[in-house]
Image (cartoon, rainbow, N blue to C red; front, top):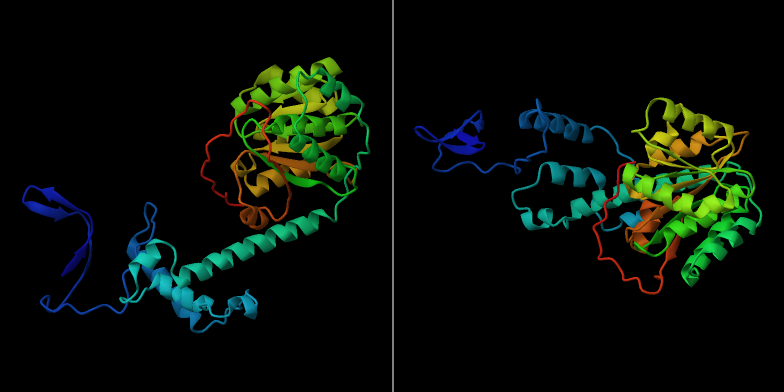
Length: 356
């Protein structure tokens, strides 16, 4: 008998509790299995044997079902076919180099990675094409509030901030929804860029919503915008999950009436009870903390009288250009690549793409 499981020291020596096992004939010359035994990530109540049985059945279907190749011939040339890659990864031959699997460099893995990236990229491009069929309120140039805010600041925007603001304003003047990602290091001035974009909508009598991933970050944004916008006569509302009772109802009524022109909050702002009044711009901070569907839920919620809001995404996470073109193919990209005087760059941080 061959047993597989976690070995522990027991009262009578080494022991395994409920191991997997296989009956073997002559252990002096154990037969080499045709494939390596896969070990899958499991959840409670699902055993390895169950997963192997299911994958066995799925792999058998590969012999009877034709799988259409998504990759064009010129891209798939010299690569494993999809069925071959699936068989290799689920039932690796004993001669396979484990080091290749552990580093993710095996041709079968690279084939599936390319397939997944292509599918994601195509879905994002389809999302972008679909958005271009919608209409948005074109917000023409009116710099009255913008000039008032800039005159009140004790500093001048950097050249990079001015360039990105110009790109945003150019998008917002169109009658199709802006979908733009602004990338910039911590301290590069993304919040000021967002504020100037918000003023472009507010000066036209429209509402703006900013969604942040945490209540702490949302509250910080609300305080910043109040400090900047209060002297301009613009009311900033704050909406988060911890608000209860009369305070929450009062805030929702102020948003629905249009009294609040700038709404800052967490995911609570796209709940059913929150009704906007002329929402023309949605700003989302730290996009990678939200899924695509959450972002689109707020975007769809802002649809009024046949118009969809413009959308501005902000992130401090460094994203390589090639990755941005793949993971965020539905967005135009702007980079604030200049820090204000006296600011130092933050150390790099790891980046992970969320599920859609």
